[in-house]
Length: 155
Image (tube, rainbow, N blue to C red; front, side, top):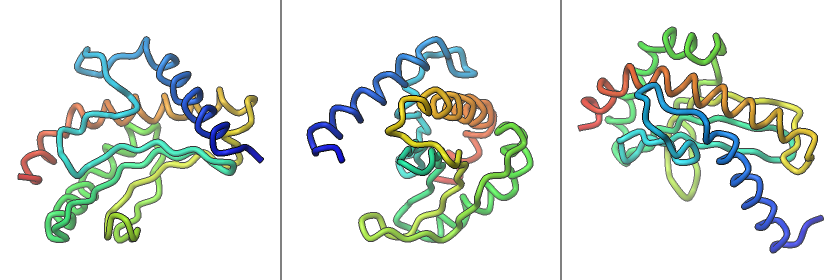
Protein backbone atom coordinates (compact mmCIF):
# COMPACT_ATOMS: atom_id res chain seq x y z
CA UNK A 1 0.00 0.00 0.00
CA UNK A 2 1.29 3.42 -0.94
CA UNK A 3 1.50 6.29 1.49
CA UNK A 4 -0.40 9.47 0.72
CA UNK A 5 2.81 11.15 -0.47
CA UNK A 6 3.80 8.18 -2.65
CA UNK A 7 0.32 8.07 -4.19
CA UNK A 8 0.47 11.80 -4.95
CA UNK A 9 3.92 11.46 -6.52
CA UNK A 10 2.80 8.47 -8.61
CA UNK A 11 -0.34 10.32 -9.69
CA UNK A 12 1.69 13.37 -10.75
CA UNK A 13 4.18 11.23 -12.66
CA UNK A 14 1.46 9.18 -14.39
CA UNK A 15 -0.45 12.20 -15.69
CA UNK A 16 2.73 14.07 -16.64
CA UNK A 17 3.84 11.02 -18.65
CA UNK A 18 0.45 11.00 -20.34
CA UNK A 19 0.76 14.71 -21.15
CA UNK A 20 4.13 13.97 -22.82
CA UNK A 21 2.61 10.98 -24.64
CA UNK A 22 -0.10 13.24 -26.12
CA UNK A 23 2.19 16.15 -26.98
CA UNK A 24 2.58 15.17 -30.69
CA UNK A 25 -1.19 15.18 -31.26
CA UNK A 26 -3.16 18.25 -32.22
CA UNK A 27 -6.88 18.90 -32.31
CA UNK A 28 -8.93 18.51 -35.49
CA UNK A 29 -8.76 22.30 -35.63
CA UNK A 30 -4.96 22.04 -35.92
CA UNK A 31 -4.41 23.66 -32.53
CA UNK A 32 -2.46 22.29 -29.61
CA UNK A 33 -4.75 21.04 -26.87
CA UNK A 34 -4.30 20.45 -23.19
CA UNK A 35 -5.67 16.91 -23.44
CA UNK A 36 -5.89 16.56 -19.65
CA UNK A 37 -8.23 19.55 -19.51
CA UNK A 38 -10.08 19.24 -22.81
CA UNK A 39 -11.60 22.62 -23.76
CA UNK A 40 -15.35 22.07 -24.21
CA UNK A 41 -16.00 25.84 -24.02
CA UNK A 42 -19.08 25.14 -21.90
CA UNK A 43 -18.54 25.70 -18.20
CA UNK A 44 -20.57 22.67 -17.04
CA UNK A 45 -19.57 20.10 -19.66
CA UNK A 46 -16.40 18.20 -18.89
CA UNK A 47 -14.17 15.53 -20.35
CA UNK A 48 -12.70 13.52 -17.50
CA UNK A 49 -10.12 10.78 -17.54
CA UNK A 50 -10.11 8.31 -14.70
CA UNK A 51 -7.85 5.38 -13.91
CA UNK A 52 -7.76 3.07 -10.92
CA UNK A 53 -6.73 -0.47 -10.03
CA UNK A 54 -9.63 -2.05 -12.00
CA UNK A 55 -10.25 0.06 -15.10
CA UNK A 56 -9.57 3.25 -17.03
CA UNK A 57 -12.48 5.45 -18.09
CA UNK A 58 -13.11 8.28 -20.51
CA UNK A 59 -16.08 10.32 -19.28
CA UNK A 60 -18.15 13.00 -20.96
CA UNK A 61 -20.01 14.71 -18.11
CA UNK A 62 -22.94 17.11 -18.36
CA UNK A 63 -23.55 18.81 -15.02
CA UNK A 64 -25.39 22.13 -15.11
CA UNK A 65 -27.26 23.12 -11.97
CA UNK A 66 -30.47 23.37 -14.01
CA UNK A 67 -31.93 19.91 -14.68
CA UNK A 68 -33.88 21.31 -17.64
CA UNK A 69 -30.69 22.38 -19.42
CA UNK A 70 -29.13 19.00 -18.64
CA UNK A 71 -32.17 17.24 -20.14
CA UNK A 72 -31.99 19.34 -23.33
CA UNK A 73 -28.27 18.68 -23.81
CA UNK A 74 -28.78 14.97 -23.04
CA UNK A 75 -31.56 14.78 -25.64
CA UNK A 76 -29.28 16.39 -28.22
CA UNK A 77 -26.50 13.93 -27.38
CA UNK A 78 -28.95 11.07 -27.92
CA UNK A 79 -29.75 12.57 -31.34
CA UNK A 80 -26.02 12.59 -32.11
CA UNK A 81 -25.41 9.10 -30.69
CA UNK A 82 -24.69 7.43 -34.05
CA UNK A 83 -22.15 10.10 -34.99
CA UNK A 84 -20.49 10.01 -31.58
CA UNK A 85 -20.35 6.21 -31.65
CA UNK A 86 -18.69 6.27 -35.08
CA UNK A 87 -16.13 8.83 -33.87
CA UNK A 88 -15.36 6.68 -30.84
CA UNK A 89 -14.37 3.74 -33.06
CA UNK A 90 -17.89 2.31 -33.12
CA UNK A 91 -17.94 1.90 -29.36
CA UNK A 92 -21.30 2.89 -27.94
CA UNK A 93 -20.19 3.61 -24.40
CA UNK A 94 -22.41 3.54 -21.35
CA UNK A 95 -25.10 6.24 -21.31
CA UNK A 96 -25.92 7.24 -17.73
CA UNK A 97 -28.69 9.85 -17.76
CA UNK A 98 -29.26 10.49 -14.06
CA UNK A 99 -26.18 9.97 -11.92
CA UNK A 100 -25.74 11.47 -8.47
CA UNK A 101 -22.71 12.43 -6.41
CA UNK A 102 -23.03 14.23 -3.10
CA UNK A 103 -20.34 16.73 -4.09
CA UNK A 104 -21.84 17.70 -7.47
CA UNK A 105 -25.51 16.71 -7.38
CA UNK A 106 -27.21 15.18 -10.42
CA UNK A 107 -25.35 14.88 -13.69
CA UNK A 108 -25.39 12.90 -16.91
CA UNK A 109 -22.44 10.89 -18.19
CA UNK A 110 -21.38 9.03 -21.28
CA UNK A 111 -18.56 6.68 -20.35
CA UNK A 112 -16.18 4.40 -22.16
CA UNK A 113 -14.18 1.92 -20.07
CA UNK A 114 -11.11 -0.19 -20.51
CA UNK A 115 -11.57 -3.06 -18.06
CA UNK A 116 -8.93 -5.21 -16.40
CA UNK A 117 -6.12 -2.67 -16.28
CA UNK A 118 -4.39 -1.44 -13.17
CA UNK A 119 -3.30 2.18 -12.94
CA UNK A 120 -0.55 1.11 -10.51
CA UNK A 121 0.86 -1.61 -12.79
CA UNK A 122 3.62 -0.19 -15.03
CA UNK A 123 2.87 -2.89 -17.60
CA UNK A 124 -0.66 -1.48 -18.07
CA UNK A 125 0.47 2.11 -18.52
CA UNK A 126 0.82 1.84 -22.31
CA UNK A 127 -2.61 0.20 -22.65
CA UNK A 128 -4.20 2.96 -20.60
CA UNK A 129 -2.40 5.71 -22.52
CA UNK A 130 -3.43 4.20 -25.88
CA UNK A 131 -7.03 3.87 -24.71
CA UNK A 132 -7.13 7.50 -23.57
CA UNK A 133 -5.44 8.68 -26.78
CA UNK A 134 -7.94 6.85 -29.00
CA UNK A 135 -10.90 8.14 -27.03
CA UNK A 136 -9.62 11.72 -26.86
CA UNK A 137 -8.84 11.89 -30.57
CA UNK A 138 -12.18 10.28 -31.47
CA UNK A 139 -14.05 12.63 -29.17
CA UNK A 140 -12.14 15.61 -30.55
CA UNK A 141 -13.21 14.59 -34.06
CA UNK A 142 -16.84 14.53 -32.91
CA UNK A 143 -16.67 17.67 -30.77
CA UNK A 144 -14.93 19.82 -33.35
CA UNK A 145 -17.86 19.15 -35.71
CA UNK A 146 -20.78 19.37 -33.25
CA UNK A 147 -19.70 21.61 -30.38
CA UNK A 148 -21.53 24.63 -31.82
CA UNK A 149 -24.86 22.84 -31.39
CA UNK A 150 -24.12 22.14 -27.72
CA UNK A 151 -22.80 25.66 -27.12
CA UNK A 152 -26.03 27.14 -28.53
CA UNK A 153 -28.15 24.86 -26.34
CA UNK A 154 -26.12 25.78 -23.27
CA UNK A 155 -26.84 29.51 -23.59
